[in-house]
Image 1 (cartoon, rainbow, N blue to C red):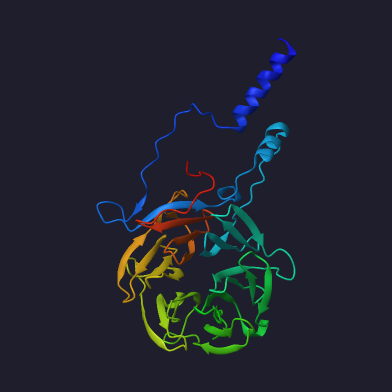
Image 2: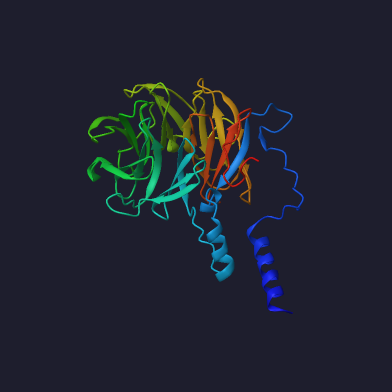
Amino acid sequence: MPYQVISRLGLAMLALVLTACASSPEKEAPPPLVFPPPPDQPRFVFERTLKFNEDVVIPDRAERFKRFATGSPRKVRGLVKPFDVAAKDGKVFVTDTVQRKLVMFDVTGGHYLEIGDKAPGTLRKPMGVCISSLNEVFVADITARQIVVFDINGSFLRKLGRKEDFRRPTDVGISPDGKTLYVVDIGGVDTDQHHVVVMDANTGKIKNIIGKRGTADNEFNLPIQIDVATDGSFYVVDKGNFRVKHFSPEGEYLGGFGQPGRVPGSFASPKGIAVGPDNNIYVVDSAFGNIQIFNPDFQLLMYLGTRGEAGYPAKYMLPAGVDVDPDGRIYMVDQFFRKVDIFYPYGMSPMPDIRHPAS
């Protein structure tokens, strides 16, 4: 076969690898996955799962050619053991306790970033994360016993707190004005230091300490996560007491709900918590494998997700953190399946997907 013919065939094959075949028939899109399922009125729609950098970043043409020509492997990065999540304006921040990093998926911008592996913003074991109205990202580092602050683009800003201020900080919540930080200290079996530390979000100066170990309304037993509502009040998952407790910004106990059990509305292993823009309360139960959604009067509205042996949408084995962004989207972390599932309110449009742009 002449050399020119071989060259033309090779170029044709390469073109097929780098571009989709225009004549290929398009597969019919599956129906949306809604919750609760029919015949109930749908409230949320599954949007996407985040696990790897390629869930938000598309390799450019040069990178695809390099892989084809050299046989080099894909440079896949992603989650190893995620714990908590916070999202705003399409940017999804996930703490990873094994990688010792904060991972950022920029869904609408098409970027992926790993944060916390360079001094002075080094992370040792990041747990809880939140984003302020001032676009500052606060991370609770349980091993360093400090709060590390980054800007919305991942640049280090400052560290808050001294080691003597905390025993085991597991989560952070921020006031609506971005000025007051609430830090959950889970303590341990050998201390009464099971409480919430209230700090100046800029200087780290301690303003108040709320609670101690116990079973009373204003006490905690292994508190683990927190979130702040739009009115400045905050909710704490009191894991060891199987309760969610509600406090005023000043730390006054306002009420609570929950009891140990295996029926909807009770808790077996409560962990993550988020308060939506509608003031509904979203509580993750790692034993149930779901999110239970309560209204501000603490009445159960619905649950989302079930336990599953495979990491399909809304299937969880070890769920942990949860967040609800200002648009009402839910972000759910599962440690076992190493993923974040995203759901949007029924009737809302999904976020633009750079991997599948609209025609």
